[in-house]
Structures are given as structure tokens and as C-alpha cells.
Image 1 (cartoon, rainbow, N blue to C red):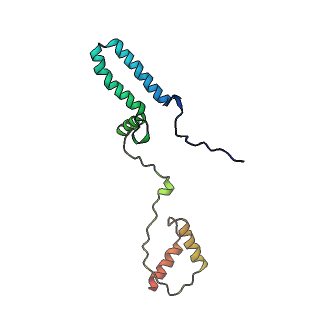
Image 2 (tube, one colour):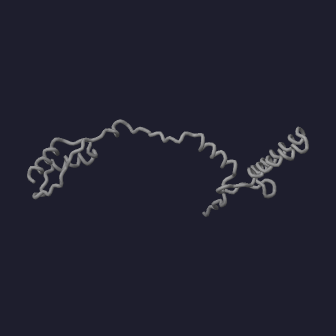
Image 3 (cartoon, rainbow, N blue to C red):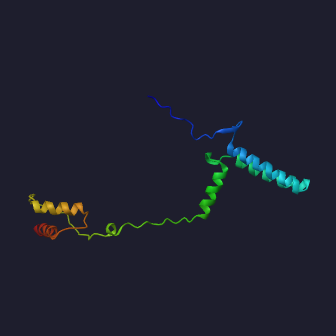
Length: 149
């Protein structure tokens, strides 16, 4: 059975002609603010104050910098400028923070390549614990190899 996958899910629905719900809301808010300004301000002051308000609301309605609405762009700008820009480091648990002892190992060219099961077990333990745990057997083996050189 085939299932239809919706396409264009990032496109907003049109409510009134080519306008989306957000755009219609911005234009409605512009109309209400202009009506309030018309009733409270004298004619010349209304024209001087109404022009920038109209431009601002038209920008919020139709302008999309970088493909996102201007309202979102302004909100993200405020968040960027007013949020702290410090990355807080999250501590790791205590057992993971333990720093293993560093053992200096020289390049060893072993002449005999025979290893006992104890040596392999010790090396496996060292590798499994990522160097945090090691037995004295490994230290002795390393000392023996260093003395053979």
C-alpha cells in the first residue's frame, strides 16, 4: 500500500487571498494602530507619524530576510544580543575524570616474540581499562623488556 507523503509542509496556509494568517494579523494590527492615531493626532502629525509605522508593519508583514519572517529575525536578534555567550562546561562523572598514570614507554624491539597467557591477560586488562588500571605484572614485563635492550 502506498502512502502519500505531504509536500511543501513549510509553506503556510493562505487565509485571505494570497495572505497568510500572520500577514493578515500584521495588517489588522496596522489598521487598528492607524485608526487610533487618526482619532488622537492632528492631520499633519498623523501623516508624519503614520508613515514610519506603516512602513514598519509592512516590513513585518512581507519582508523575509534570509528566508524567515522579519518578526522571527528580530526576536532571534534580541536573543543573540541579550543572552550570555558563555558556554558552560558540563562536568563528567568522577570516575571518568580520573587521569591515569602516564608510563613512558620507549620503542621496544623484542627479539623473542613469545608471550605468556599472563602477559596477554595483563595487556588486555590495561587496554580494557584504557590505561587506568594496570597490574604490577605489566610493570615487570616492561622493565624486563627495557633491561633486555
